[in-house]
Length: 211
Image (spheres, rainbow, N blue to C red):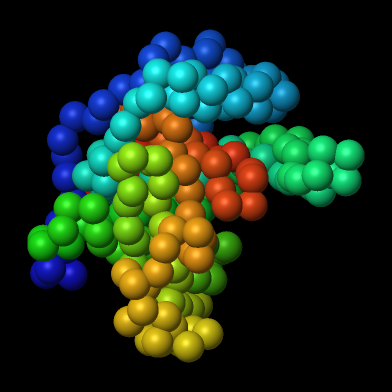
C-alpha cells in the first residue's frame, strides 16, 4: 500500500444535524448512550440529505479517508405506484457484526484510491477491495470490489480476483459513474458519514480510526 495514503484533515461539516441523528451517532460510539427509535433516525437521515442538497455542500475524497464502521442501514422495496424504490424500515447492526469500510487515496490523484470492506463473523473474516473514484460536484463515490480475501482463525482460505476482477479493475476509470456501484454522501462529519446507495437505501457509519 506504499502508493496510497490516508488523511487526518479536519472534515467539512454539514449544516446542523437532527437530534435523533446525533443520538444515533452517540449510541454507536458511546456504550452508555440510549438507543434512539429507528424510525426517527431514518427521518433524520432523509432530512440531512435534503438539507445537504439545498445548501449544496460539496465534499472531497480526502474527507472520507480512514476507517468507518457501519452502524445503521435501511431496507428498500419496489413500489409500482411510485414507479421506483421506497425506503423500508431502518435498523442498527448488532455489536457482534463488525463491518468496516476503509478508504485510501492514491499519491497521483486526490479523487481516486481504493476501498476495503471487511466483514467479521466470529472467526471468519471476509475482505473485499477495489478501486474508487470520487465526483465532488455530486458527492458521489463510485467503487468496484474486484478482489476478495477470506480467512478463518487467521488461516487464509482465498486471496485473489473475483468475477473477472482483473479486467474490471483495468477498465474502472474509463467508465462513467452510472455504470458503477456508488454511494452519494450527504453527511460528512469528523466522527460520522452517511450516504444513499445506488439501490436507494441509506447507511450511517461512525469513525473507527485514521489509518
